[in-house]
Length: 189
Image (tube, rainbow, N blue to C red; front, side, top):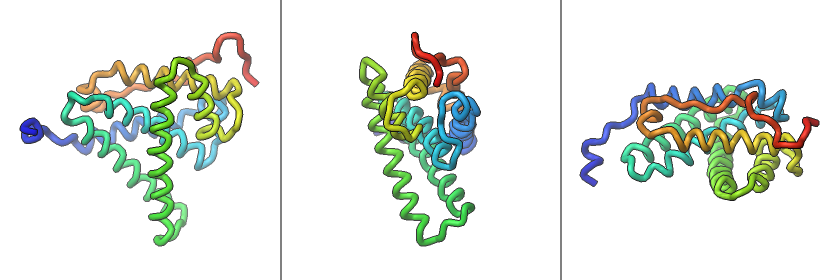
């Protein structure tokens, strides 16, 4: 409790940089060209949620770091503000925005739980199934879903290996999606 008295809140620049890195990674053309993510507003939303969930998952595991929950919450708040702004820019009415925002929040927390559980499993089958449903919009665990699962596992491993101090300084790096190969023995559709 006393540590909170000496804790510094993350700088707004740190929050913006972390969220900016998430959005930039979600916009990588490889996801849409090689992984089969639909190049739609929903597809882009799903990739932002995926990367945000990976960061929040990492920060949620940093129980010894007093600033981790605050950093996670502030990045999530920036995501919410960005989604609110985007909805209004797309012409969604003032009365409808709160309902859509609630659904987006529910989607985020539901996916965070599903991805965390799937990443804890020994194989990537559950993760591929979740990604197929949530990101690819398919009901199959075809090669693109398994490749995306390999990417997500690599991203989660990289984030898990990143010290909290680096994240608090807005130093975040995701794997290059082009460097993630199809699982052994599979060919692209």
